[in-house]
Amino acid sequence: MTTILANTRSRPVELHLGSGVVVVGPLGRVPCDTEDLDLGHVRALCRTGVLVAHTESDKPVRRPRKRG
Figure 1: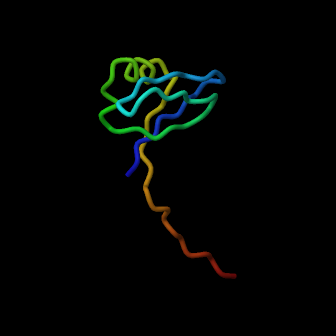
Figure 2: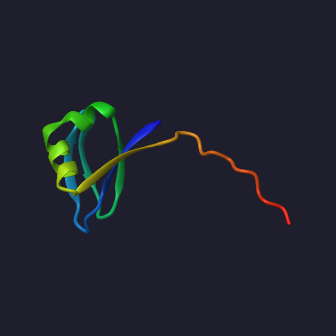
């Protein structure tokens, strides 16, 4: 699973994550470490709705096509 931070606004957001400084573009998304979700500024931005954190599967699930 990969943790993703999604910017819900039409303005960029600068984040200081464990891996370094990252700018999330307007309505953009960036992968992050789960530890980054505990950073104060990330929690505040999630609490106010500027960022939304969610997880995604690393491998896409393949679904069979319906026939007929």
